[in-house]
Length: 184
Picture 1: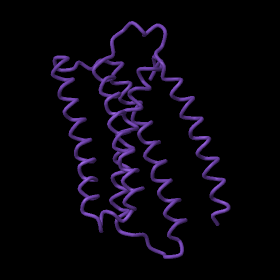
Picture 2: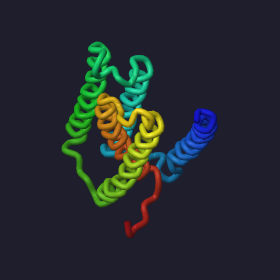
Picture 3: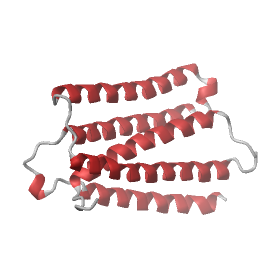
């Protein structure tokens, strides 16, 4: 079975890396927008991207080092896990309050509303891909046992939460980096 999944994983990884590289290249600043300062919502999108990437990588590193069952067995790893989750959320909320205070009660115009509305579709796609990934991996890994360890429920919930926040932030950044049609 590993002989089948190893090439699939490598090919998938290469395709995802190529797609992410192409996508990140498309997020470079537009020539006609290069002189404008970012809006508070765009700044918040960038902060959200940074926070979710750091928390996601930290969670992945924690699971890689402590194992997927760390929530039940390792109190130190559980403390680091909660520190990551609450610290990331706290940092995002603090930056939101800071940006709101600094910009003088952020004004959201029609373009910002359109960007927020379209960012929901990016968030939905990323959350669905996350859940599909969990379903495939857990089905393949635990098909012989018939049941997965209970600690995975926490990981599924929090990874879905992180991927949702990442998707919303990514949708906001994409909205400011790409043109939105007038009928959006």
